[in-house]
Length: 540
Image (cartoon, rainbow, N blue to C red; front, side, top):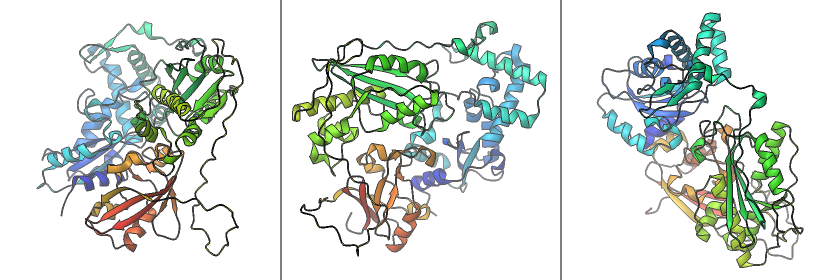
């Protein structure tokens, strides 16, 4: 039997997570650790011939000492589950915190495993799998991710199961205070300050400092947000590009504490709970933005940012600011119509077409890019003038809306009824020329697990159709896939695994075409957010 790294990685990504105690006691091979959100975060192997899955996962990773290669212990060494194993003065309290952590992992974490023959070079296969693995699946490997903030509700659930009394609860509360006092020293080990210095301030007097906003006058603004998860109100970063009368751009950026437990998009933008620790909340940031942007023209690139601001306002019970919103996607469509069906007008496509230089999925960088798109468009054709926004935030003149081309029509989810006669029209129907965007050789693993990897040309798909690693973090927009069946499939793209999220149709697609490992699948773009998938049995 052939064991390819790609097939093994696919099997790990698709495996159903199970409790660590169920790990086999008589097998070894590759395995993955799954966090309390249900996300695969670490891939490893039982490379030693005398270590089984059970010993490695349930006994070492779960109960081993934090600070070593025991990743459950390391990543949940936090809050009431925290201890400094090198501090003998806190050993009794620390032992209780560690016992709580061990039980927390049993209750709320999981693992996956792939038994392999002992005759294989498992260490080599592990290295090959790691080289192919998406970043989110190996976020814990080599300490590339900080330990979690305490999942308070889940810890409480474990404590209810354990039925601990006042003595134990007092001990782990002392550990929480010690954790809050911990600092990272030059050696990487915690250094503790006196406990009395860690007493938290009452919530009512919390006041994080918001970065001062630049002084005007400004012609217009561009705003971009990043979110922690699929809830549009979970804003964790806001960037505003401020365009002066001489067309110079000054960028303002702030991290925002969304006060959420679930971080689904860290793999995309790199922002985590650790990043926003100590950052202001949205309720603290909004007054600064409201004063700076009121009556000004505010660009967003697509409709997401405006809806995110509105949703976040709803979460904190604040009125939605009445800013004058414009969409730089519409401006780009008017200025560069040739990109329709040829990459589209997302920032990733415009970056390549216009030669823009910025880091995508950083709110400050994306806001600056949207502002540059508007400035470039002004050089192509007249764009309605924006009023100057003075330091007070008030515009000196009203901004007119643009006379822009309409949005693309929604793509039907089923094949239209060919018997229905079309309405007469004096205009010829729009013609979309199909465009080859990629070819991929399929493996037996693809056929067995019903997926088609799009890795080699994934960047050619629209960014707003790319979501996270599970359905809870689906993208805001879907693409239409014509695969030759009875109905077009509407799906977004899994940005972690880099394939179509909905995969039920792929089994039938392979079956209809008699697909075999080694043959190729071609993907073509037939229109905006519209694609065709077909087998290609040529020389490619």
